[in-house]
Image (cartoon, rainbow, N blue to C red; front, side, top):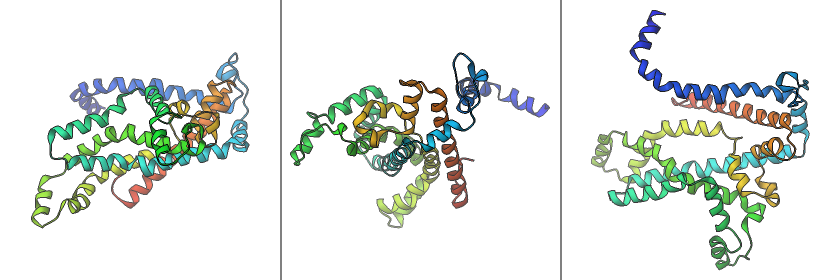
Length: 301
C-alpha cells in the first residue's frame, strides 16, 4: 500500500490529467451497459428496467429466425471486408508516397488538401456525395461520356457499396496517413544510408526498411479494424441509403436504429440485436489479437 501511495504522489499530476478521460468512459461507456438487460426483457417504459418482465433469449431467437438476419449479416460483413481490402491499405500507401515527396511546400499542400474531408461534417459530406452521383451530377456526366445511361447511382443497390467505399477512402486517406508518417519518421535514418551504400534503391528501401519499421503500427490498427468487422457507422449509411438500396445497404446498426428509434420503438428487440453485434465484435477482436500474438510479436495485449 505504501508503494502505491508513493507512486501516486510521484505521478499525481499525470493521474489528474487522465481523470476526465476515465470519468468519461465510466459515465458514457460502462454505466450504460446496465441497460443491456432489457435485451432479455419485454421492456416497458412505465415499468422500468427492473419491473419489466423477463423473456430470456426470445428477442435473439426472433432476430435469428427473421428474414433480415442473413441480409444484415451479409451486408455488414461485405462492407467491412471491402473496407479492410481497399480503405485500410490506402493511408499506408499514401503515407509511403508522401514520404518520398522532396518539396516541402508541395508536400504540406498535398497533406492539407487530403486532411480536409476529415474535418467536414458527415452531413455535408453525404450531401456532396448525393450531388456527385445524382442524375445530373459530375460522376454521372463522366459515366455517360463512357456510354452509361443517365440515372441516379444511389437508386441502384449494386452501386451502393462502390460509392460507400470510394467515399470512405476519400474521407480517411489523408487523416489516416498521419500515424504512419509519424511511425516512418521514427525509423533510424542510418538504415537508409547503409542501404544506399549497398546499392538499394527506393523500392528496396521501402520493402526492407520502411514497411518492417511501421509493421507493428499496421498490425495493431489491423487488429482494431478486425474488432469492428460487424460495426458499420450507421450515420453515413442512413444519410446515403433509401428503400431502393436496402438490399445491399441495410446493415445491423441501421436496423437497430430503425427498430429502436424509428417508427416501431422496439427497445428490447433493438438492444438484443445490438448486443449480439457487440459480442461478435469482441470475439473477433480477441481472436485477431491471439492470432497476431502467435504469428508475431505485435499485439494489443
